[in-house]
Length: 195
Ligand SMILES: [Zn+2]
Image (tube, rainbow, N blue to C red; front, side):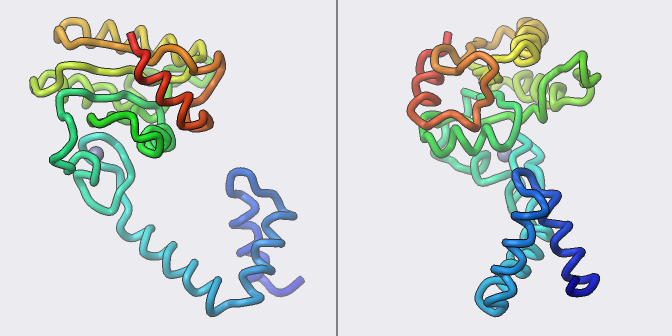
């Protein structure tokens, strides 16, 4: 119904996380009700983001500038690097406004099940950042899952020879919990209570 363009649009939305066919149809209908005020701005924003947003070459964050706005912020404490799994985790910590240092996005965790090894993650660039000498503390803010714990152990081993101080977020992160679903207060407690 409605032609191939409409159908293609619905399928694009239906593949997004948290949406299905039904929500996709509702979104498309809503957009088409007011094309000038809803659909055109969306199309422009998508095109602009697709053209400009890249992974930061230093930390892996997503931004339209490289190094990203966090890495280029002169106010931040460059001696503390907080290691997170995803850009979503980085954004969650930024929203909570508890970390004034820099970040490093790993891109996931080690996982025997899905076959993710150290070479699939952003590990070597982290070691190199520490070896450059400006970093005095690495905070491991990884999920409280078996894979998160395995990854934290692995990184601690790899970082140990550098002599950098290694801490891990403590209380507040529920077992099996992902960082970016935590409320800001819980996240703040977890970061302050690192050990
Ligand atoms: Zn960055």
